[in-house]
Image (cartoon, rainbow, N blue to C red):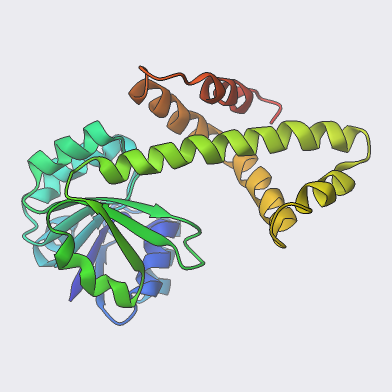
Length: 244
């Protein structure tokens, strides 16, 4: 089976390692030096351009950016005759548009740490064609409805980003009082054994990627505009501050 990647960032690289027993194909055309290094490290077969990647993929994965998701689908979706996945943080409206542009699209969402047995949640009628991936990654069918996987990812994102903002606010105050370690220890009493490690990782990740998380929250608030999003809006305000 040939699995093609359009875009080869960290997610694509990690997946290529998970799918190591399959034939991985991509292109280095117009890619950055860092991306080319990543491709070479993965041992993926490099084709001359993404048209060739799309034509030859049994599963074609777009992992570029949410802003380019529709453009990529328009350009390569119809060329590909296999299954088309978009692993960007797209909203359900975008997923539906991509479904109309490609013959065999499955809405998808990677949930969890890509390094530690993530779950690939899927919605769409071609789910059975992806069961082969279960030997590498846990796939879960939500429904046959395009958009459900994207909605699930957005809902989860509301929770994780709000939690991160609360952690940052609380630990910043505790740090100013020289009580950060003690605070985390008290919080860990009612959590799992890895709570402190996970909390520090969540804080670090949010601060490092605040711009991207801000954009994702803006998209969430726009999509769920008919719901009470007071916590999400407060989180957006917190993440938008330059002092994160």
